[in-house]
Length: 274
Image (tube, rainbow, N blue to C red; front, side, top):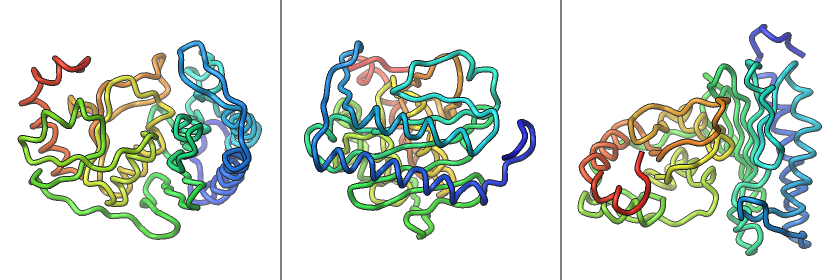
């Protein structure tokens, strides 16, 4: 186990991390096939016993991989202790719980290791289809062993963008087309890294656990994730929330940011815009 300040051997970490996330996915998939008790949290969002079981498994296993690593998860009460640590596991045990409840095989397990505010290892696992998107910093992005490198263009004509209609509607005049809707934001973002979507948008208020792993996968694939201001997100801050987000290869992302700026007034009339 590396010391607190020693560099992490990310290539060595990748194997055990993939094994643990794979086991977490199997736990979730068992509940998905056989049924899971569900209830509503205080913030009116749904949760199931599968979310809790996966969260507890990952909490027991992931911190063993990196000494003095902190923890931030959608299904664990937050603690300020993480703010004093260089390295923090950022976890969404089931991203897309609504899809999970509805029986739609679109949910994923999302796990990232963040160091000094930046993701350095990440996996987004689609257990229903046995597809793992993964990356470590400097090692490229992969889907089940296939290296990812999405095509890029500065033209928005015919570009398939995944995201909410409230954001996509004002962009139609720029040539943008609505791509398939995916419940889980992490799943939507990694589809950009693979080229299955040309770009993706997200409304404000995504959390660290929704995006950290996919952010690294996008960057290692040669794409990127930024706010509407063009600045990449940082993680393990006091607030876990982020503003509106754009994911795309670099030239296409610049074109989308320009289009969003042109449509700022129309977007502001629809929802919070920041």
